Length: 67
Image (tube, rainbow, N blue to C red):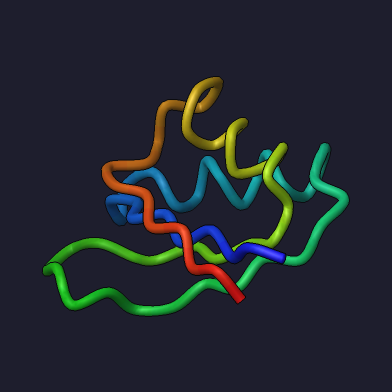
């Protein structure tokens, strides 16, 4: 199972969380990033990671961690 880590600017985090509250059926982990003004959103759901990346266009960078 892979873990998707998406780097999101602080301005877009609220939009992602609002979308997740209405349409997300997965777990999200939100944490601080080393990059100033950004947060990292972690999920194991590839469909929701793709939604953040393609539909919401909120992700700056994506890291996939093999577990």
